Image (tube, rainbow, N blue to C red; front, side, top):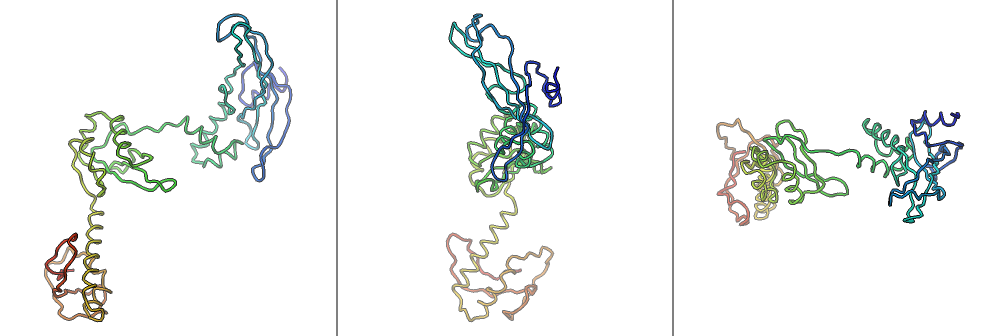
Length: 330
């Protein structure tokens, strides 16, 4: 065995049908992406007599096919295996075939060893751009390898308390996320928040008994989720997140306050108090046990001052809650 054949063993290639007859160095790429590659010139050939299409022993050599395969090599430079594959032609069915090797799949240009090396680098939380720079392949090729070999699966056990929400993901689109309300661990992240996508996931991944065991579903005020929650989880209670309830109450209070301001004189003390001390309407004092009345109004009072406004006549919008008075204990 020649010294060049030993080079293949160092690179993890053990196919005896590959014969090396030379090496060279050359540059590939443009600009900042231009790199020096180690090119190994080799030939893949073996004896094949029976046609894989018709089964007759009528094959005869029909030239070679030159391919370039990216393989795993030393970390300082990428390696390309310039492989000249033997071709055959059948005189019976007139079909052609090409020699194959376990180094690379048919019609692929990235070897199995390099794909395994990409997965190892990805397991170290390296970004795809860095992996592409280390291995000498494109970022899209790295992404294709990860997509083909990594298959995320849903949680095997469906928690009894689920949280539904959406978030802005790539390219400004909204995605759906489901987590365990007790452990805060992710159950599933879907690429979109469409009702049919969410329903299809739960119906295909979990049985009726598993979905019936869910006791509570916590979500925001998104009406689209409420339409199918009981269809997927028949025994679940629908719970609205208290954050969104308080947020809605705060916005409603600001809307009513704004309507009051529009009906008051801008130079009055009542207007100035409602205008400048708006934070008082968002403060809570759960420990308060008795009322305290301050009959004097001071538009420059600090926010910590307790103010009780006298009833003011106004007509709020019909869509809002209809308070009897804005005299409220803050």
